[in-house]
Length: 333
Image (cartoon, rainbow, N blue to C red; front, top):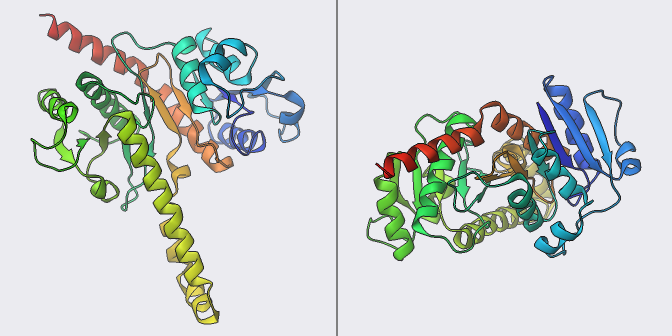
């Protein structure tokens, strides 16, 4: 199995990317990893490993580059060359932690969309209080969505949750302003009917306040709402941990209390740590394309590689294609 990575994207590149790749190569003997980027910088952190190779390029896509223009003009950028390795069949999947818009553009233009998928979806796995997590899609690949798109998100999310996350008959929830069937705008009302008739394990509407309680295994929404929800969850988690840290280091008494509670606090932080769940998959493409968090450390990169390996291993992209194709044939009867 071959996975290619943009070694130059993200806040901690290339060190975190290289160290995460090394950890993954040591953990999975069936894995070959290609790192694309500035060879001299990569080699500073790379230990000798015959299953990790480097493709050199000096060109990179910057965080503030306009995505479509950058992908079209910077043909030798590490992210573009990475996606091209998948397009040409030299790699089974790719991972990048850099410019999200550019990765989505490279995925669409080079890797290509699965026939029958109208709009790909960006889908991270987010934490829940019980540590199981839930998949949410879309979180920003498409700001505007149609009911049919949300149905396809539900299908793709269900396949991923079952194949990769090992969830039997995943519960699909539609993010809405209330749990009642008639709640919401025209998009959610029509999507509700399509999901209800889909044959998926659709449990109805779910509210944002219940997401971290594990209300559903897969949560479907449009990209605008999903992105706002994602950033609200991330911001709230950071604020809460910041307030806890402030309260527990305020004086000697609180520091003593913190010392006693340290194991429990560490456990809570681990449960709520995004890095344990891997990256966000760009679902609906012909091969796995994974967006690692921009601030990923080596552990987050390792988990993104683990996740990508499982998507290849369980043929997630092919299963999505076959399911969509089967649904299309049934509709045309």
